[in-house]
Image (cartoon, rainbow, N blue to C red; front, top):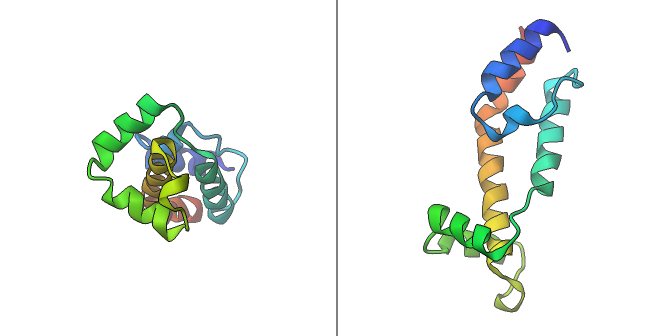
Length: 110
């Protein structure tokens, strides 16, 4: 990665969850975005109290997280607060990455 690209990416990713990820080894925007997507799939929220806090702050009605769980084939018997919080957290990260995609691609083009 070129020094200019690194500086531009630092600006784009500043203040996001992705700013602490190691992205210096990537030569293309597609590779970096793929890596971020893989990392998102690895993210999870564990421990009941953390899950409940995340849900309370981000989906207190549980509508969004329950919809995500249902769309993924989960039923009431196999869901819990940790699963719901993780699904919602991953969805929020995907949306954040989607918002950054154009800027990431531009950082590599200049």
